Image (cartoon, rainbow over all chains, first blue to last red):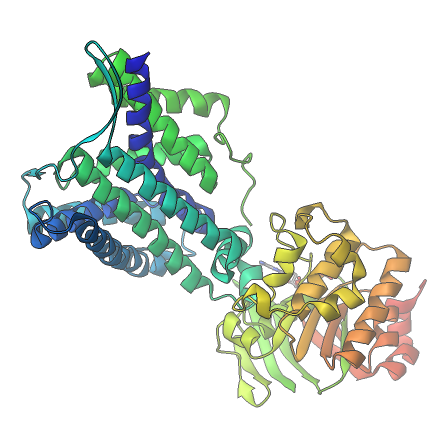
Length: 304
Length: 233
Ligand SMILES: Nc1ncnc2c1ncn2[C@@H]1O[C@H](COP(=O)(O)OP(=O)(O)OP(=O)(O)O)[C@@H](O)[C@H]1O
Ligand SMILES: [Mg+2]
């Protein structure tokens, strides 16, 4: 039981990270109907920016921690958004209206480009970092069994909840959010109402990249190591989360993220850690067979 | 207010508009009539910059708009309730109206006039757009096009698929919008009789060309029009 509780806490943390990335996949798919395969690498960029900012600020070496982390967070959001925005402008917008495969191919190309760019500029070696947020609450101890909620996990979950609240406020209540939802449903009609559709799409990429960059920062803090390749596997898992939840559905992305976190953690805990990724993708296959449009998705309606 | 001269537009290689010239003056209701596939909807989409005009010029309030992106044309005071209504099905009635002026915040948007002419929309304010009846969707589509207080309103077949009694109401409301709200209206209709009764002037579109134009009263008497569009009405 204690072990189970502990795994639940762990999976919630991991699920937060996947959920934040998955939103980026699902929003971009919702608005322009393409899978942004470079999104995982945008997350990777976010993690590198965070790491660099932490090193520059000397985070964890005595500086006032909450303030330092806030600066790192803002730096990651800012720099990564620029990447997300540029990606759309340079790689995707010129091909909009072209055949579907073209967008897919440039997305893969952009992904390879970002990986190589970071590999060349930052080196291929893995980058470790000292644990920054240590300690935690211990709920109860029972002989060798301990259930604890580390401060880091609390930090990750609280930041996720705050971000999701801000994000859902923007989407449901502001003019920007309404435009965003209108564009998802009917691009031509949105133009006819005076919405600058290109700008709305740019903002969608910026929002997705911002959320992914925060996930990148959490990843650095949680795992303590990153390299230029982390965007690939983490990205595919977050994409899986988006598909599992129903691609195009924002709540679906969050639920999907939590589920992937749950599956991965529990599989590692009770079966074999080596096969955790296989388990994640295996479950995806099973869900797709029985519910091809995901948990909250709608049966595919051809986009007009 | 709007002067379109010699415009032609194409879908790929297929020509949909052939050297069309029309004019709409401030305060008028102008109707465009024509049968299926004549190019009426294409004309409205070309005026709004959705379908590019390959030749000719479109001048709105002394500005050339044929090269502008759609959102800039709309922000100059043009608005369209397009064919098929194109309500956002997942947004509520209220949100569908708010998006009619997409840059404004909720508290800066005044829906009073719209609820006055379409009280039904007020009753259904929290219902999803996709669950409205055809007539209600038509009201919502026109209402949404009015939120930004356009000076020129383009309406594409507002009577399509509606019961005669509702059609009558919609036509009366269009007149009201024109009179009380000072909105110039360009009305596309297959219901030639209703449209000509309502409008000041009219154009007849056949195969992408304007064949006849003039005062609506005269068009109603025109034997050719009577034969082609008004028989059996
Ligand atoms: N997206 C499109 N691609 C190719 N051809 C099109 C497209 N839209 C319209 N057309 C063609 O252009 C011509 C004019 O169409 P349009 O929709 O403007 O007619 P309309 O007068 O509005 O007809 P209706 O009264 O049936 O609505 C038609 O021959 C139509 O087939
Ligand atoms: Mg039409």
